[in-house]
Length: 88
Image (cartoon, rainbow, N blue to C red; front, side, top):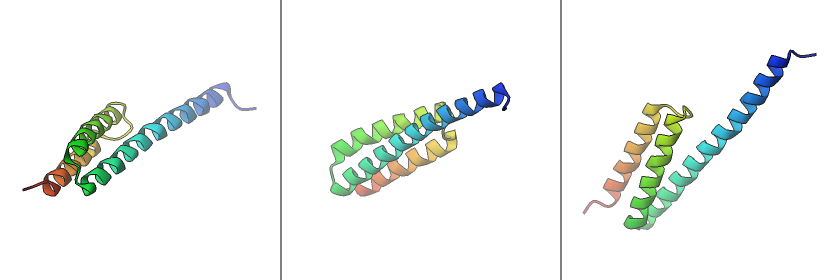
């Protein structure tokens, strides 16, 4: 028989894993949506999606799901992609 604290820890880890997976998935989905909009040339919708993506990245970093530096790096790259795509 396993120790009860081990069983509780396994339940907690599984719950956290699923929550983290959900957040990471929503960030990736938003990023793909953003890239699709930029490639399509829709600057207004892309700008709105970029704001949403930045918010999701910041939220994931605050929760410790991704590191602060990773969130900053991804936001920077997405903004740079926007700027180079819509530069006139």
